[in-house]
Length: 196
Ligand SMILES: [Zn+2]
Image (cartoon, rainbow, N blue to C red; front, side):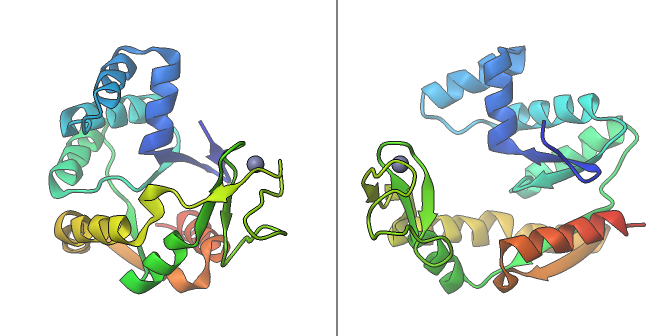
């Protein structure tokens, strides 16, 4: 697992892929849902989180994009409690909906080598052409505005209530997303280093 500057990074997608690759019991379970095109249920998501916490008892863990719902947050609290740990801090990266749409609709992917470009932040040298392999760049369906607006609706409905959940129980820090991903990462690193 990725270990960066004193903490291990937990991203649901990466950890799922790792379990599937290693053919662990929970990995095979995840694979079944993914193959069927079904949403992985919370109990399985939490099983994966539990396995990760068990493997990293001595490390600071940064959960990225997880939990996404109140039931997942409550489940994570139970997982951590079972390991005699708890959430030290939560970080909210704040970005207005229109900025999210602007950034994500600017993404382009190469049809051939799958490299990702962003017309705003990392544009290709030649319009519509991949820098790596000269393949054709296109906009993926999940980067189209209507799809992103749908995901934002789900975010506001299911994930945004977590702000209050964590604010009331643990320390919540806010980072303004406009500063860009490198500076956001730097801010998170500082918060993790200086926590306590
Ligand atoms: Zn390419």
